[in-house]
Image (tube, rainbow, N blue to C red; front, side, top):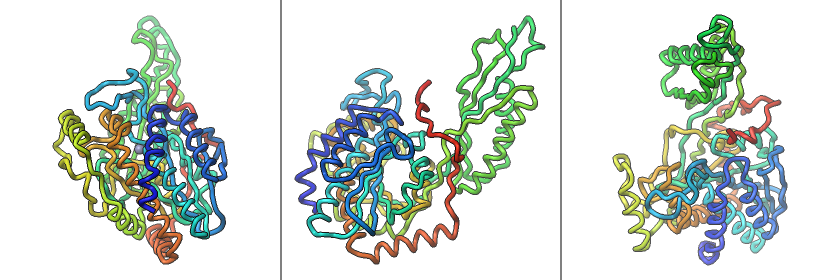
Length: 451
Ligand SMILES: [Zn+2]
């Protein structure tokens, strides 16, 4: 399997590079999704389009019956991170999007794995189903939330996913559940000097809310994160603001705890409107669960990751890595050379959120990172965009594809592994029933990147 994949790697490097060049932001990933779908169709998969009424979401299925093993693919870029594949800041188009989270590699490795597994299943007449989920808008648009709400993961036995990073590590790690919304305040405009008494300031409503949130900060459970921006503060100082908008995120390691915090934040917003005689509307943007990690799958992935091995640089890549590291604050970074090693399984939780969280409460989910970025390079940076577009990122991509493929093979051929994954899921879920935090009538925010 691994030798065969090495021989086919260059094709998937090309696929990842095309998606890197498309650099399409969340829910606008039309070319990227088309490319992935056409690759899957050519490989014999049956493609279902427009999943959950999202034009760039899809699933692709091959085979029949149980078990159903699914791999997640992402392919959205980030605004403002356009960057050449050079170790100095040099946008291709200034201000344009770029693949700073390496989702071009994410989608391509998952494709590479899905096609390789399918070929192996066909060859060996292995029973079961392999599926690829094309999941758009991971970066704050929550594509998987709407796919989860639509029930598309219900028949799946195990979900495999991975993420680009600067190290190789299997994950038994959770994340932060997140709720985010735009709080929109509507007031009454007036001349701010001539007739302030007839005006009702939307900005005042926003500021009362923000102050209430600051007082609330003292009385929330530890590990809570609340952060916000004023995304609209009015048009001009001499007009009483008719409209103001606060874009706020709240996070906590547990969704039921976050529910309580969120209710209180909404009260802060209502208080702002009440105190200032303005009107408040809440527009929900994200509502992702924390990841429910699976220790059985973490161990299985760890074994396979060690079999595949880390990423070895050529002399040229080494020079690139050394140059790009000089542009970084390296106080928290791992040394150069750590990309060759496999770290111990990660535990605890990381202080970030992902829409993989919802999937992991529905299906036992495996997750890991490979070193697609030079050690020390953080995600969402021009440095990571550069790595994701060249051979360093592609080497990490191939390592991820191989690890996904080996893990799926184990799950198809060894029912005990499936059972262990299910047992870990049931034990950690402890009877908690997943319920989407996205209201039933809430449509996917297909234009959330438009301003
Ligand atoms: Zn990402």
